[in-house]
Image (cartoon, rainbow, N blue to C red; front, top):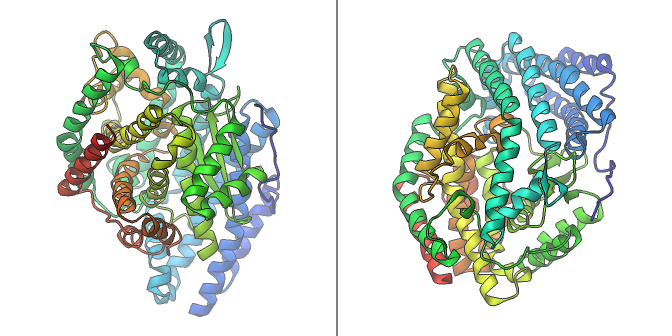
Length: 565
């Protein structure tokens, strides 16, 4: 069912077409005198108010573009933001950071309220180089090109031109012949765009490497750890990679044998890895999907459903598949209006049902945080925290999947699938993280070497139990379908870290549902100036991805699946 596009979901309180006017407002902020801690706090509030107006307008234009990559006016507005306004923001953000950090009152700011902000802005001063501005603008242009290519990607299916997400959804099918056909169609589509994807990624790697060199780093990986203000080290990540390979992959291989047996196949092939044992797609159209998710949320907590229904009524959800939409899905906050928007390019499938629940975890988190503390600042938004509430929402709704799968066996299969997804979230994003560590510490790699490395890592992790004979090339090039590698580099391991927290939340829910939901809401509305560990603690879980934690949660997850079986 087609959804009418609405442009009323964000507030445009600043004219971004007037670049000189935007620059003069930046300049005015720089000229405000600061002669006390009180002055500094007032100045920070003025700066925040102005930056939120900019952020809301630019976020609205970004969402508009993702919703319709083929509209020339929308694209022109979005590109103006990226090519004209973004360089201004980068230039003046650096000046504002310097003004703040050089103020004699900077270190007199209250630690509990401003400590995280101080550390983040000192990092930005350390990282900023004027010569990186054009490189970052070019980076955004390449990301726009990626969105356009993927948004326009269609595949011929039984005589009809279908959007790419439709073909991906066919990998769910119980009929193996349909899955295999869909896999070949997908790989054919990837092969068609592969030269463009290689060209974009080659250029992105070189641009990012130069950004890191300019800022005094040996490589982009080390630069990004500082840029993200990570509360753990590179070595912690490598240890996590090893812990998962040691404790989760053997369990994954055992599970694969169970799924292989249930599918009735002798050999587990690439098109079997996503097969679903449920007989039908969970819904027929977007309205049906939204009706069901609203019910599931309501059975969990009244506030969850109230937020979802509010978003639905106010044009804050765009979920269906159509040509010209960007791939994937995301949830984004609008800091002036206090709203949250969920974008997705969905065809009816189990994945799209779960993905909507996942994004609603982000949305509930966003609304609770806004109501308690106002807009979340960029320095507060750590994805290890954000993904805890999206994964957590998926697992809190695990026992309500019968809304879409009313038959007992289908319901059990759907629960198994969600728990299998929890497994894949422990090793899938983590293998993507390892892939990026390799890419950016070996920036002069060739496209062929990149494909070979991706295949090698895939076989160590998610494809370990799969017979990939004859499909090495296809597996190797399939990184091109992951937008994170292009648009949000090094945003991967956060999914795996937060899944360990979400599994603890499920464990708590099984013991005491009311308390687990109360803790979820408390953490989702917590003061984000705290450490990640403190926010996890408020949610009733531990921020822990050491070997014992990985082993324990892997065992718990396997046991829950066995209980369902």
